[in-house]
Image (cartoon, rainbow, N blue to C red; front, side, top):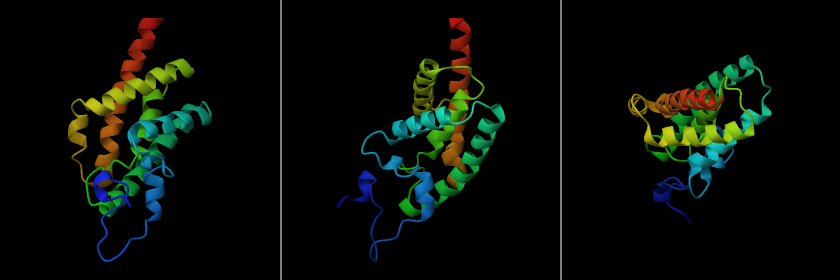
Amino acid sequence: MADSENGSRPPVGNGPRRRPPALLVATVFGVGYAPVAPGTFGSAAGLVLWWILPAATLVHAAVIIVLFAVGSWSGNVAEHYYGRTDPGQVVIDEVMGMLITLFMNPVGWRGAIGAFFLFRLFDVIKPYPANRLERLHGGVGVMADDGMAAVYANLALRAALYLLR
């Protein structure tokens, strides 16, 4: 049985705790339980969602807003459940980050793969103010730092698209 140090199960006090339904959302139906690089798998799930969504700006904007709201709620629940800030199992922020990275960027699959790598880069290095936003309380902090990293990735993608034309 795995312990909380590797992040696969919460600490057990007076017996096992039931996982709240919010964890299903926060982990994107279990994607966040990937044994290695759950953030990368969460970003890949975001790429799949981008591909499935209709290519309509309003749809993408609405989904980003809904993901931020639902991710803030479920991220907050996950922080309480796992007893730490921004648990690695929470990957709904990466899904939202991929959508922000690709928002209003006219790309096909090749560009989307480039966007994936740009987002992962900015999500890992977290340039200012993304590194400060992760200090926000609860689920908002979980979502906000990835949102800012995605804005940087979106701008870098725009610059790359401009230079490649």
